[in-house]
Length: 115
Length: 116
Image 1: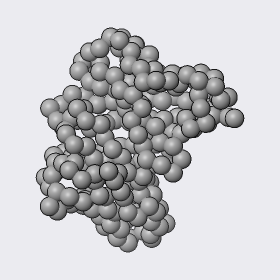
Image 2: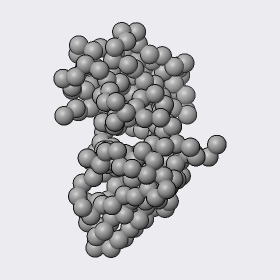
Image 3: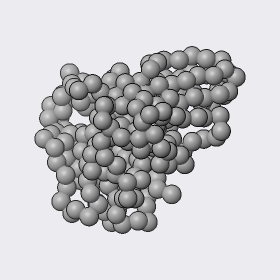
């Protein structure tokens, strides 16, 4: 089976621009998560979808970030307008079931650099 | 809030040797899971091993084992007979049991290099 795929793998944008990251979870995985790692720091939870619904978005840093999962398949994470502190690696993960029953499958991440 | 601390930013060890990565966490809750994830260079992060807090027995997965000390809130990872393919970033992670709303809290990671 294909793993979790993320696009693009790298993105370099200027402060004030908009960037959209995409995540394609493993087929059949209802749960989709976004995490972010700012350079040298811990990986932090951003939000959790169950199908198309946002189960938990408590980790979203501010209203410049917008996540969607139309139709419960792929998800996008848009940053508008981007700020310097948004630089980091954005990870997407999916799982078949919620909770700790089934393991998380991570994508390779999108490295975002805001200049 | 829960926190996870990995005090070793980088480690290196000779191939075939044993290495232990440390992790401590802080929580006032009693029902939780602990994990070690591994991210090889330019590859996806994968689960190495997990431990249920209610289990006293330490989890093992082939060459990987943990030393779970609940009272001390310590969760170290031991890699035996280390191999070149073990070179990776290792992240310790924690989640409370929360009725399907689990989310991982990660440490800052340890970069492990296996030297041929």
